[in-house]
Length: 105
Image (cartoon, rainbow, N blue to C red):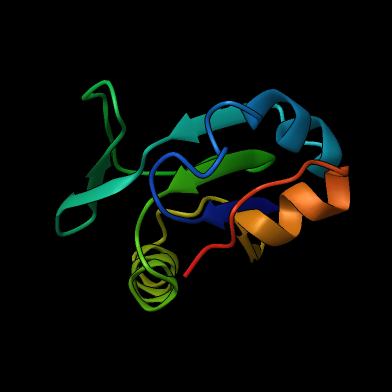
């Protein structure tokens, strides 16, 4: 499964990415996903991707609506190489982990 965690900048996604990945059983992390052009996206360090492997944690600052649209487009193009994806708000994930944080919009 691909787990997508969204929330505003400085909300704890990157700081807690290892704990979040462990919680969801993810082997890979893509931090700071931003759509680049059709079927391609990049991360915070500028690496470009055209697909997402199974067991990946994806972190993004996009809004919930933008994240859903992006995930649906990626699924339609076959960029999500396996199985379903799950969407999580960062404040809910941090609460689940017992970490205090400001709520995501």
